[in-house]
Amino acid sequence: MQYSADGQSDGAVTAPQPGFLASVFHDLGVEPEEDGPAGRPPGGPDAGPDGPSPDGPSGADGDEAVAAHARAAALTHHRTLTVQAEHERLADLLRRTALPVSAMDFESQLRRYEPRPYPADGAAAAGGGDPEPRWKDFAPEEPPAAGPDEAPSRRLLDSGYQRELAQARLAHQRALREWRTRQAEAADPVADASRRAHDEAEQARARVVQEYNESLEECRRAYRLAEPAAVESLLERALAAAETNTQDLPTPCRAVYRPLTRTAVLDLDLPALGVVPSLTGYRLGPDGGILPVPRPPADWSADYLRLVARLALRALQAADAVDTDEILAGVVLNGWLREPGEEPLCLVSVDADRDALARTRLLPPADPDDEPDGEGVYADAEQDDALVRLRRLGAAVSPDPYGRAGVEPAARTAATVPAAPDLSANEFAQLVRELLTRGGLGQWSVRLRGPSGLVATGEGPSGSALPGRWVVWASRGAGAVGEEEIRTLAEAVREESAERGLRLTTGHFTDGALDLTGADGHRHIHLVDGDGFRELARTHLGLPLAAGR
Image (tube, rainbow, N blue to C red; front, side):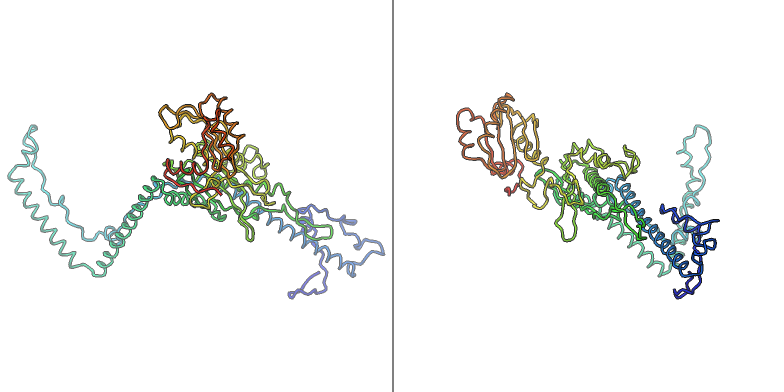
């Protein structure tokens, strides 16, 4: 059927082009109907006497149906290409998030001033102009030596040469005066103003660079003193610079530094769930409608976790690389999904100390096809290199981000002065060790450690505040510690052949536990509750620890 320019049928019948339809059907995996004899469609001129006439109404309706089917097929193909483009963008994002980032340390941020020459100077030099008289053009030749053994100084004292030298100096000075007079007479007031403006602009540029470098040096001094504002500023600059390769996928990251535990807590905003394509493509339905082909939910979730893992590793790498003076003892990273109308959801949380970061290669291969499984971005998520590296750091990762299955953050950044529940497991262990080491307990050895506490042994020299061999059991929590735990610690002291035991908690002890340590057989067990723990932090570290909630 042909159509006029205004979109109305003109009544003429045009047969569809078999080559075009065959190619469309072939791309969509649809087999065209069998043709009649000699390649003609059924019901054509060779059909029986009861067959429809090509010029009759039935023939026109058939052509219209085929044309509608072709249009639907073309639209399906176009939409499928759009979905494929989304998959290619995801693969490109996975590649770019794995690219290495430059270390954003203080040296790399220094600016250097390079003066720009005045344009007229270059033009005068190129055109020749009136050059300044040079002394070498006036200096007389030195007298030749009278003999091979005569010293050069003796020749220079020749009276004739000294007269020529004096006359040459007078001539050079006279030429300089004349040249300066000519320059002054030929001076252009507009050119002089332009040169002065250029010189002032250059001085301003040099002053800006100098002031910036001086402020940067002040920041460096504050950073080496572990001042929180300076450490946080440097970390956030490094985290922002790490986003250079993925500016089309903004993932801001905020940093909080805790002097008490020398730990940086990073809050990373994760991309929206819609960044991962949910469809494989489109297909034609039996009735000619266009139907979406959804991806398996497991593939959809796995691709999002791959992207999250790469973003988390990139942030950890940026924070580790910028800390050239080793101010940080550890890094905690929480990845948050923030959606309108929903509470922020933590999908990934990492609690890593400096040694763990140093042992781990934080960036996976930039090309997904270089991963060990060889299946690129569509590999099994459990075998994905970035997720494997993240789990080696002890990361907690959401099993189903699209089902809003979150994880517990390893540490919280809400309070400026943290309480024990705000600390991560690494922070708490580091804090306990630091307090007891400063109290005189050395040879620290951790035997057991979990999210809520640790068991360790240590030994202090005689005459110190903590002499002899100790078994330390430290835990955090608001609950009460009872008699059974005191008996368990006493048994551990005997098994370790230690002399004393220390039960430390951020909570409190029951009356029964306090009475038990005063009885015979348990006097070697010492107790420190939450108030005592905070007092130790204030005494040995000079830093506050808030009361637990």
